Length: 85
Image (cartoon, rainbow, N blue to C red):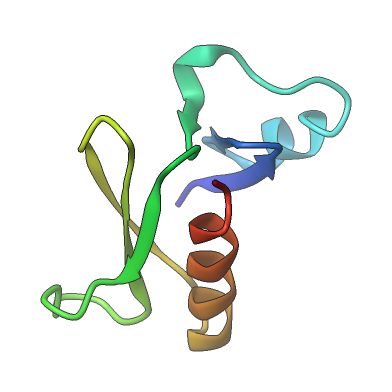
């Protein structure tokens, strides 16, 4: 499981809760950052292995799948990421 934090138009991914909590002070390196400017987040209806999965397609056409814990979290995450234009 990864923890994610959206700051401005960058999604920072963290391996554990400790590094996630430390990110409130200083966000991580560019190595764990996904730029979401002009990205599109949609529900991954074709992915059936797990529930509450959404797809993030970035401006450079790379795609990542993210799993939310709840369907409400999935909808909120995909809406928030899609509005980062």
